[in-house]
Every structure is written in structure tokens, then in C-alpha cells.
Image (cartoon, rainbow, N blue to C red; front, side):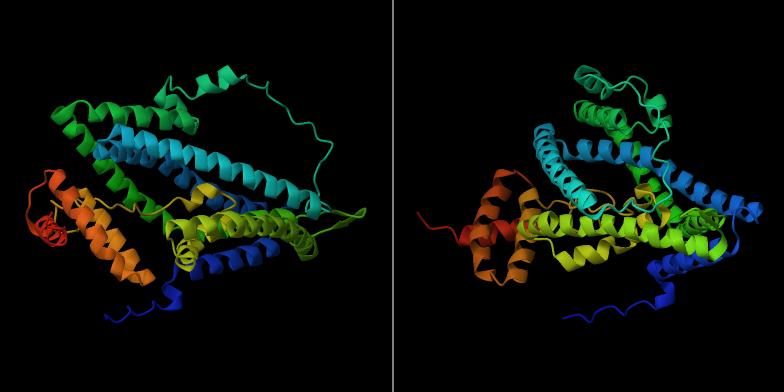
Length: 371
């Protein structure tokens, strides 16, 4: 068994520097109130807004390119449709449960009590759309306009239809597919570059908000300023944020953990993987800052996939996943049965019987009964 890779020093961890940015933002923001140091406040606001702007610049290019490439490389429109329907049903069910949990906790905890909210302020309400208008909104009319307005749903529909169309033009679509595949790879590198600025963006967001808090507000008819004002609001907002994360823990425990168990996902490994994105989203007050920085792909035919056997059949990929699950769960005795199915699937797939395809076919056929 190979030795585990050495753990990185703490100072080289992104999470460490995000916490440093968080602490420095609170410290400088409270020391430089907006009313006394408007120049510092404007600087903090610029840093925060610039980081969020860079994050938003990622969304449309990476969304369009990955959807188009994903559908076009799959090639099976029916399979994509089935997967889309399942994803939509899952999304609707989980969203409904999340709304119910959120409403219950908000009404029980009442986290907004004590916050300086202008409850009498009139907020303009747009006219409610009819069902037909909502459905029509999903169809793209001007891709550039939708992208500029961050109107994501029509962009997703356009990319989906474009990917399906690309599967139907055969070899003539290969240059287009190569272009969008290149765009996707560049955007992943672009995202990595932007994500390295996360500690700075977190610092700007916290300093900007705390500086505004420290400029002063009324508490029970008394005006307080500076650190007392900042600490008072920080405590009140901590209750608000605490209720949010308590609701998330309840949702995670009651919904996501059972789903992960069913799908064979290791819970603690998943938690470690989302630690940095969750911290970034919390610190910048923007979920857009938590965009994924990598694409998990199980497809040896992709040019960017390092797997050496490029001819491995799809059923062979599935067999490798099953093999890993069997080893982890202590059910190695189940593997021969799957091997027989994989052998029949490899032959039926009419792939070249070379490399691992040949090994899977031979070992599986040897286990089939003679009659």
C-alpha cells in the first residue's frame, strides 16, 4: 500500500489564508469606520466588488462550454434527457424540503429580531408573471443579452439545444466541439487564477461590511459608533447566520446524508471537499464565489483524460467503479458476477478487443457456463 502523500504546511492552505483575510477584514473594518475614513471604506468596497465581478465573469463562458461539450461528447441524446429528467425531479423534491425546513426554523428562531431593518420601507414589486410568461422566459431570444443580464436559464437552454444539434452534424461538428472543449479548459485555468484571489476578496468583503457597521447606528434610542457598534451588529448578524447554517445542517443531515449513502459517496470526504467553497461563499456573501474549480470526468476517450487505455468500453469503466465499491465495502465475492456481465457488454459494444477490453472479455467468458 502506497504511503500517504505528506500534508501541506498550514500556511500553504487556501483555507488558512481565507481565515486570515476574514480576521484582517474584521480588524481593519472596525478600526476604520466609514464615517471617519471614507477613503478606506471605498477601497474595501472596491476590492470586494472587483472580486465578485471576476467571479461573475466566469459563469456564462464555463456554463455554455461545459454543457455543450458534455452533451456532444456523450452523443446519446436519450441518455442525456433521462438524466435531465431525474436531475429535475431530484432538484424539485430537495428544494421543496429545503423551503419547508427554512420556513420552520425562521419562524421558530426569529433571527431578524434586533437587526436595524427598515421594516416600513416600501420595496417596488414587479408584476407577477403568468405561467405562460414564465415558460416563455426559458426560451432564448438573444444569447448576448441574456448573458449580459446574467439571465442563466435561457443560456442553459441555448447551450443544451446547441449541444444536441452538434451531435447531429457528424464529423462537420468536430471543429466546433474542439473549440468549445478548448474554451472549457481555458475557463478552468481562468477560474483557478481568480480563486487564488479569494483571501483578498474575503478581506475586502468583511472590511467593507464591518466598516459600515462601525460608522454608527441606534440601539434602544442611543447612537453608538466604532467597535461597540460593530460588535453589536456582528453579534446580531451571527445569530442570523447561525440560524442559516443550523438550517443547512438539518437539511444536510436529513436529506443529503441519506442520498450520499444511497449513492455510495463518503460523507466525510465530501465535507472536506466542500470546506473551502463553503467558507468562500460565507465570507464573500456570494454563492457565485463557490463555483467548482475542477471537472470530474470518467471518460477515457477525452483528450485531457490521462487514462492510458483509450479503447476501454463504457461497460469496462462501469466495471472499474463497481470493483472499487466492492473493495471498499468488503464484497469482493460479488465481482465475478459483474465480470461476466461486463464481458458480454464489451463484446456487444463492438469495440476493439485489445488491451483491457480483451482481458475483461477473456476473464468474463471463462466464468460463463458451458451451456
